[in-house]
Image (cartoon, rainbow, N blue to C red):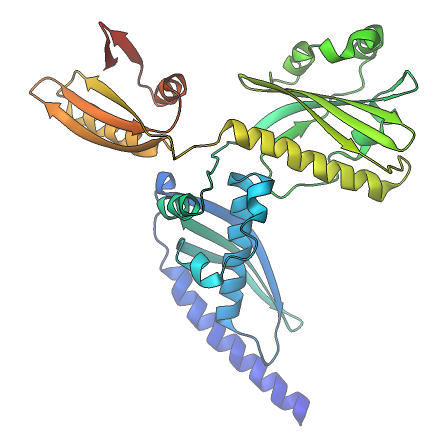
Length: 357
């Protein structure tokens, strides 16, 4: 009798749960991408039992989405400062959500969630905690690891980091790693540069894979100490970094997996640091738009709303032929000008005035 009664409860929960969720899913709202931060295709599963709850499912999805978002916009040190954020506070940051591909199978519930966070609320939430968020795009990078042990080089399939780098996934997905193919010409070039590897520029190798971004990692192995030195080029940014690991067993896959995980977190942090938006910096610039074209004015003001480094803007003065905008921004002027060019607006200095072309 108990089993029969439990099955009835499960079926009742299923019907109620489905009807409620259908009403939520059917009320899909269009979301402007420049006002939200999206975490999509989040997988949630839960056993169906007497404690099965719609609210608990949604809360679990919100919390998982929140920390997935943090892995994309904060460096690893700052994420640790937010490990105990209350679910009530997380829910105030959510703009909307979708539930997709719901399945009830063998007393278990499965679904994919898309969770949309309010960008302004996230920025304000982090500012209150004196944290600055990053807004990096996904970047494709050639990754070339070289193990150096007793003056011998280990390349490609003779290199355990080359073999297992892509099998160890990181949560953020910010860096798309491209592993070079084993090319005899490249092998000969690397061997001939053995005495000067730290000054080697592999941009020509990277270009063969349709990118100018690269990470050249020189992995020095001495007994159980591993020195992970990397030469990094992310777009116009260049940096050298170094990680040291102790008690390393190069033949132990778990040990290598741990090193790869930590190295990827470190490399993600570097890319995020390059794209950090320091909202404590408030700079001002006046931009002149010489136009009375309503469409151009509208497009420009929409662009102002899309650029994350712009904190606010206002119209300082206008007449029939031009509008002067005061822009408050959080980055260096050259980066701001580059961001405008992405949206089709060139900023030029005309007799000490910044004019929009």
